[in-house]
Length: 96
Image (cartoon, rainbow, N blue to C red; front, side, top):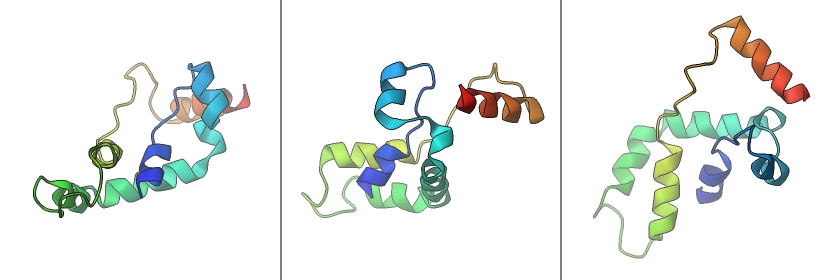
């Protein structure tokens, strides 16, 4: 679950190193599936990860942080146009 959380984080298209290591988001639809699963279960996962809920030592502090990052709401840049223009831009980025 922690691996899915880490791999579900968006890849910055402008970050050449990230793109080389992880590929473009548009080439990996499974990332969006993971994001959707984490979003759908965010309330429950946050409740499980609250301090004192899980036995000590069950998961590491780093793993807990990864899971919490996966359920944070995503903020998309406001400069992206809405609707069809945004979809067109996303497709064009994938083709580059």
